[in-house]
Structure formats: structure tokens, C-alpha cells
Image (cartoon, rainbow, N blue to C red; front, side, top):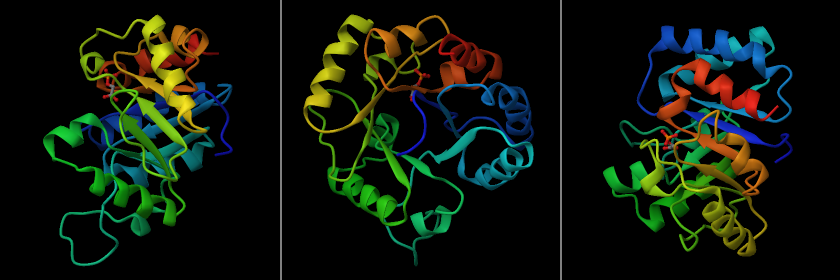
Length: 221
Ligand code: PGA
């Protein structure tokens, strides 16, 4: 992982259409040029290629991530997107978000297969964990710690608690650790400075409105 820190991920989840995403990039893109870290944009699959073209055309300092990746390699798996299909489009992928673990019953074996498929295709997994003891498959280098109570609730974890969990996760391996859960322009800096997070995973609460996301970038600049 050679990208500059902090990593700030915008996970749009199943929100926004192509027109919104074009406007989002037009609003956030100019702020990417002097951002000291790395912005990672994660819209839904159908918009990744168009977002990539827009980023390249405008020379924005924005990388792309898929919100998931198939546990299967390419083949007869209707509805799935394999790592080899998107390896030229995304340098990163989210894996193991709590919404996928809950709604799609993703098992530890599924998540391990996803990590292997991603790394085989040279896609860097951003592996989401819900606590300090969540299993982390081998080959993971970037972990996103997201306590479930803080996701989409405007109830972020107190950074004095976050720092303890992050240091426990870091003691388990040589990981970069991001914090996610109700991150905003008001609290972003405290996670990176006081809680020793190497970046932030920002979900629908403050990534959908580009101005809210820009406020987070400004707080870290
Ligand atoms: P939130 O979501 O920022 O809306 O709390 C975080 C996430 O689900 O990654």
C-alpha cells in the first residue's frame, strides 16, 4: 500500500445514481488535488467505470473501491462480480462490512475467499471488523474498525474508546486501521489525531452530500 495517509473512504452503499455520482466527483474532485492523504471513492458497481473515466479525465487524486467482491472466481455465478473482472478499475475493495455480514450471512470462509480473490488480482482489501476480536484473514493489511452501534446513527464512538480498540487491533498484526461510524467534519480529526486511526471509513451519514464529505477532508488538511 503506497498511497498517502490518511485514507478517507466514501462508501455510498446502495445510494445515488450516475448523474449524482458525476456531480459528486465534480464537487469533491477539486479538493482532492491538495488533500495530503488519499481519497477512496466507493459507489455501486455499475458506476465504477464511469467514475474512473471522470477521475482520469480531470486528473483528480481519487482512487476507487468496490463495496464488495465475489467469493467466486470468474465463471457461472449469475449476479456476481469477480475480482478479475474489476482489477483494472479498482485498486481497493471493501470486504466484510457489517451490513453484508448481517443481510447476506457472509461467513468467515466467505470472507477469507473474498480476501484471497482480491489479493490474487492485486486489489487491496479494506477488511471491516466490528470489534477488537473479529477474525482477520491472512494477507489483510488495511482494517476498518466499525462498531455497529455507530453506523448510520449519528452516535460516533468516543475517541477515547476507539484508541483502545485500535491499539489492540494493531497489536495483532502490522495493520493500518481506519475508524468508521458516524464520522463527520466535526469529529474526523479526533480519530486520526487522538485515536491513532490511519484513516476513516465514511458511510451514508456524511458521504452522500459532497459538502459534508468535503468538510471531513478540510478537517484533515
Ligand atoms: P456511517 O457508515 O458513516 O453512515 O455511520 C459507516 C459505514 O457503514 O461504513
